[in-house]
Length: 421
Image (cartoon, rainbow, N blue to C red):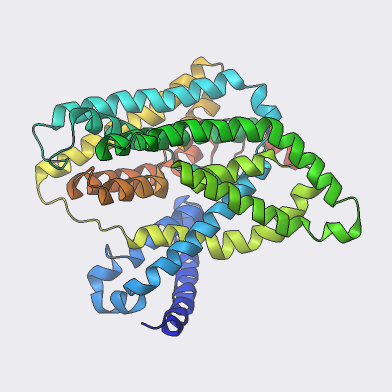
């Protein structure tokens, strides 16, 4: 295809994707699923798992291979912009007052599923061909532990936003624990890849570079950005530079953490959390919010769904193992985080809600799986099992949350805020 033909086809793809996301979102609403989950389902439906199965010719014509890099690029831009907006709403002061709960939930969300996943890898490694030849016992343990530890951070953030929990203690606690969990999971993946390739600089860059970036941005970076934006807002002529300067710094932050091996969303989120609040926050959300959530963010879910093919489990043994992976993942992440939150003094309802939200893996899991599969760390069978686990745990999140608070019920502080408004 020529560049012109690719651009023409991409416009049609955008129209189909946006229309399909809204239709599926409408159908999913009575089942208690938010728009973000509908977009994940839409991505899988438009890929080889459904459309490719029912109408392979139409699916191949609508989404030819030369157009997929364009959708992927749009998806990354949308995801980075959205995680930047989530960072803008992240209340660092609030989490400081609840550091004990945040650390406890985060550690439980990392350690418990990691131990269970690593133990499962040890049991299965010599019995079922889930890992390709050449993958060591340590690499298998590290990878499966990391895969079960990850949280659907962008999805968790959007669920919190759509339910009106952004800026609340519950929402901030879940976001803090989810962000730490994902950063740790990406660092573990970097260690696995470094051992597999023999290049330990991958792990050093991920852990060391990511840590330096986080500490620098939340200390010196916050103060420097506050002064820089105050200088830009001081005069009308400079005021027009705020949006382009923000986008330049955002792209550099995403590029930097992606280079470290942690993933671009980490840099975008930390940069957003480091910016001054108030008028600047409202202005950036007004300019960037609608286009990001309506047009660009659905591209992220669809891009990942186009690369997902479900249907590779061809025996009762494989389906049984898939069920075991699902049960272990729920026990390790959902139950583990809920128990940790409760032991930290959180109310029972909040603890269960946090466990439900943290248990969702979403397409962040699929990104991790695609990287591992492309590098030859896991087999296609294990890839499929973990994809199913990611889909099921994500679909569980909102119904479980609704079970705790009800479809219209909200935490007390949110209800009070709405009543006062």
